Image: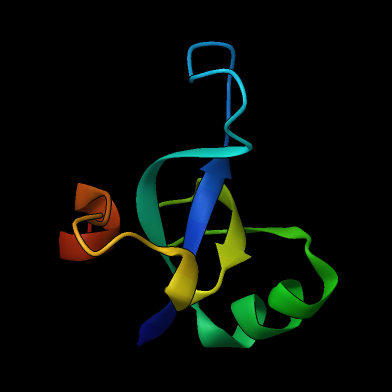
Length: 72
């Protein structure tokens, strides 16, 4: 069961100044926990490369991408 949250890095379409953007993604703990310590990107459940972020850094109204939330 995924219990870590990741955010995709910003692209040219995302607002300037935002390092991480887009919807949140679910990340498996087995790959997410080490990535949180090293700040490396890991694949989310949907396959999007994400950086694991602390739950405290996530806005209350942020939602997961539909694939991470409901499966493919």
